[in-house]
Image (tube, rainbow, N blue to C red; front, side):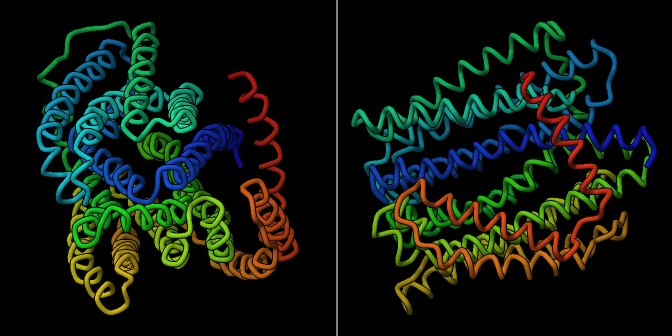
Length: 503
């Protein structure tokens, strides 16, 4: 491997590790919030919280108009500070207007939303306060993306980590002092405002400031709008089931399903981590026509995602009841524990196929394919939820299982279609023998993990640690890694450690 290529891989991998530490805490935050809200405030409160966060996550891409990936695509390779400045502030102006309008619409619609999709008429004040999370999440996302665009991943990670830590600490303190959900939402707004001001000051030091240039927005919108519809469709697939459960059942059922979904979907971090670094990296490699390096980035990203996600599925299946027992109340366990492995498998397949292979369409500027695939998946998901939730509820008193199966079918359909279509434009090697070795190792690990009984939160790390060690020992026994890979990652870990300590 040429020295230049190795340098690129090392930067990619070190950035991935830095982002990984941030993403890890993001997922830990989600798990902590299950314990903080679900266990302390109850399933109904957690259901309201889950639908509110789902609504924010659904509306933010509409308000953003696809400007975050647009910024990366158009400014990552730009060297002219004037063009960077005009591009950034034009995007910030546009998204500030759209997100503020979205927040106001949600504010005035709160009573209707509370009595319908939230399944709790008393949720109106929480929805009204939470409406302004749309505005703050949108403009914060734009400011954070500035650092991601220019591969300042340590700064990008700092802001994301600070937001997650701030949210978590304040939520825990508020619950301990007998405050409720609405005070937690207020704390979210305060944290985001402080971080936006801080990020804006850093950006000002880097590129100064200028008025928005409206004329360049047409080019940005032509690229970003299909990506916005793509993101909206993707979030409908991941989040629409909460609305359907709230509509057909109640906020308590939403809370149970959301807690199980949140635990099963922890696998998302294993692809979100490298993807945050992968997007600007592969865009740069594609523009420079460094095809061999590009193929290797895709190949190894898939390999290491599967290396971690496959044992995670087996581990979650083995520990699902124990996790719910420790982190929630008894009302979550009977129905929630079967949802976890179904969601975990669905998420792994979706991220290994659509999320990774779908980047190929972005490289060849065929983002309309991404949008079409997710639109079809979203429609399929809506139809399946409308059919399966009432069916499972009336026949088995298990409506949330219908939502889980709808998610599984939708993710599987999108994934297969993505892989088939993407191979017309670009292909890379898939190590099938490694996947087989990983599945065998993970299944043996699950047997061991299942036999370890735990009763408290700290104890949950015992089977996780034992299982991880046992799994990787088996991988080495099966010779799942080449000597070059082992040597390479030793160098990366040493280098990343020193870089992270300097942050």
